[in-house]
Image 1 (spheres, rainbow, N blue to C red):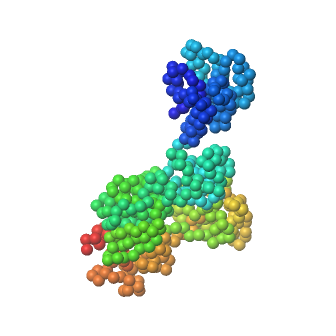
Image 2: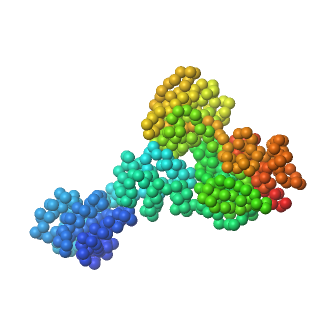
Image 3: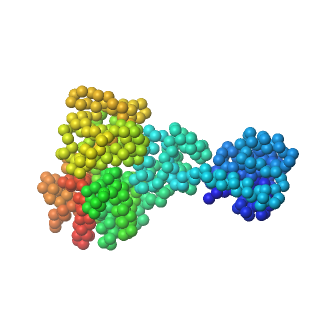
Length: 541
């Protein structure tokens, strides 16, 4: 919506014709400049400023000159008398005047309106509306900025990224909010509120995500919102259970970061992991599930049969049953420089938010699984060349055939077999990788390095309560019964654990963090759905 502020006591006819708000019939300086400043703070557009040269306490040239600093693209018009020719020339030089009008302008239909109409049309032709939504200001190589970008993208929150070092709009916006570079990263909400260096939870609260449980007791709490957790939420809520899902990062888990899933039943053309996750998220909410995010469970204990979960902010959640779908995280690469450059050119997982910044540059992917293959195909649309680094001879042992075929047909993807990353180099961001190829070291320029080298279960916080294997995967069902610790850990006197049940009755595990699980989206969805069947059986006891 265009705003026309009239800084002269125009006739009522003129004001009505242009929707103008007169602003200086009283103290001109205070009213005029304060109005313009207010519009700027509210980030509203200003199309045209019409000022009378002869106002009570200042000249129109001064108003137009100061207004140009705030709205350089607004059209500037000066009302002058016949004796004010010098003022008009001064306005042209100082305020870059677009037009000046001689008083009187009667009849306005001939001497005023056509001129203003042409100026407004000219402004409209070049006006670019500002972005309306969440804006993130930060440094390109800041891990904190990267984390916030990933958080917003993970929840499909449309946002505008502004690099403080290269974007003049970022610097102007930061100054307008009264902040400095030390406050970065800064999230600017749609209403103009600025959040300096916020946590993900602070941002989540302001954009409407739920971060606190609304009930005192739940039938089932699902910990983790990957494919298994979302499936459990959908079936639990649809079958009448009071269901809560707690997710510490973003919905979808590792699958949610996938650029393209092409082997999931019912989607012949494939879909992105984030799209699948948010479809399931929306479905679970529609059916009545409650979702907390981002929130993290840090402890679980059993009191009189009820499970008490402690969240990272100290809040407690009580439930009758729990479904653990915590998933897995990528293992870290043990090479010099990896920790120092993590989030600044080195990324664990797909990091789709950084793909566009790799335009026409070389990127490296470490790993030979499906996640690595999907990331390679996605990055190949932006990067100059994508190198897949693997220790083995080929991808056949760890990647699906359809992905191997696609990679082979993509000219700017190159496989580097029998290769490892020996070191990553750079001052404040990744600049080079040193590869070890059959004992020979080779230094190469690199814009980004994405790591997919196997997974470890996200179960550190619960391994003291339930029985896990040597790698941290949760033992359930028959795997638990055959474990030597079963006799002392299983406390139910009348039955053995159900198929997906852990050593704690009423606590079930599904998805990639469960020992023996198959690392596929369809398998995780099946286990999450099946876990609700056992929850019903447990509650019926």
